[in-house]
Image (cartoon, rainbow, N blue to C red; front, side, top):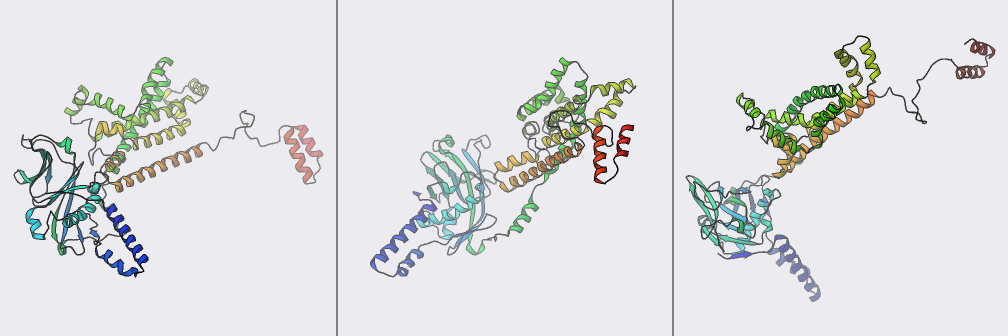
Amino acid sequence: MEATKTAPAGASCRLRVALAALALAAAVALGLPGTALAEPASDGAAAPVEVSADGDAARQEGCAWAVSGFYRAQVGSNRPIDDVYRGYCYLLDAAGCVTAVNTAGYVVVYVPADVADRFGIDVDDPADQQQLRDFLTPLDDGQAMGSARLSDAETWYFTDEPVYDVGDARFSFDQELKEGRYYATILGTDGQDVSDEVGPANIDTCTLVGASEAAIAAEPGALEQLGTFLATMDYSPLWVTLRTTGAAIVFIFFLGLAAAYFTMRIPRRAQDIFDTVFTIPMVLPPTVCGFLLLMALGRNTALGQWFIDIGFPLIFSWQATVIAATVVGFPLMYRSARGAFEGLDPNMLDAARTLGWSEGRIFFRLMLPLAWSSIAAGTVLAFARALGEFGCTLFLAGNQIGTTRTIPIAIYFEWMSGNQGATWFWTIVLLAFSFVVILFINLWSRHTTKYRLPARSDGKAPKPRRHGTRGGRGRDARAAECRDEDVACEDVSAEGGAL
């Protein structure tokens, strides 16, 4: 069969518009009625293809056949089948379907001979070729999800033979390479691999039916679309994220307080070393943290193998998501708690010791209440950091739906698969969580610092307000009040002198 090289749909539309404009200009120049020349142009225009809202069926007014069961496979496989190399293979749902193989330079469309005879399709007829293309292009565009599309190809080949050669590449269709399993393959005419030269991309398959047999679903309204989207949404990333973050924040809270209190009670040189160790996960890329944890807790280590033997694996499990969230969120809690403890007056702590208070009582009755504002803010920040963890979790726990797929991981993989609706949904959920966290921190900080006096303009510490009449300013104020009320000021002066 010959290759057909057709212009893109947009170019053909512009060509028809240009021809119509030239015809109209000629009619005006010759003084002919414009309506007489408009009719022939409209006769040649093909009716638009009506695509089902599900994206798997299409029909066209005036066409005796329609498309049903459209399916697009993004990639194939270049592995041997039953230890025999068959070329680059695509697994088909069934035999006898119209198949379009998209490559880097062209598209090969296969119409089974019996299907072509049933619907009167001549694969060598340019009109039938264009009609097949008009059906396949919008259906493929609807499922492309950002990858290669049939509409981008200019060169198309059409055949009704199950084996078809294009240069050194041989395309074979409806090949039963396993019992009951049919494939479309791309192999060199010499039996060698030509996938690098051909550049196979996606494959589309569909079934041709009578025009009256195609089920075209109407486009639903906005509210109906939203209801369907929410009803079919997989909410497991939300539950995995909340469960992971809830468990991680418990470890982060107690470990952060313990580490901060520990570093306050060791020598200065040791403090610098431990402070670096406790803070380093905050500056390392999350993927580096995940890699180090994988090397430390993997099945090839004694610790990792021991946990596997007792039935509590630490990698590629839900426990791994908790470990990853704890590691990346811990430094925020630790730094907040240590900064709060360092801001406490050491003389006050020493005074408590002279009164016979134990270290435990000093911690729970003095240090913790006085530093609670910063500790609470650090806890919320650590919770938010654990909520948005991605790199360390993906490295250590993987992407298992319902087990380790958290919201950030779901956003990445939904976007990679072209599901923008789910990507936007989870993005909005994280934005809402972030907004609530930041708002809570601001309100909490305002609540816990409202008792503080504003700073003086001269930089000195503000003095507490006093209510009374001690000093000259008190006498002057009382005297002014007396003058305003026309009260004798002698008594006031006497009172001031007595004071």
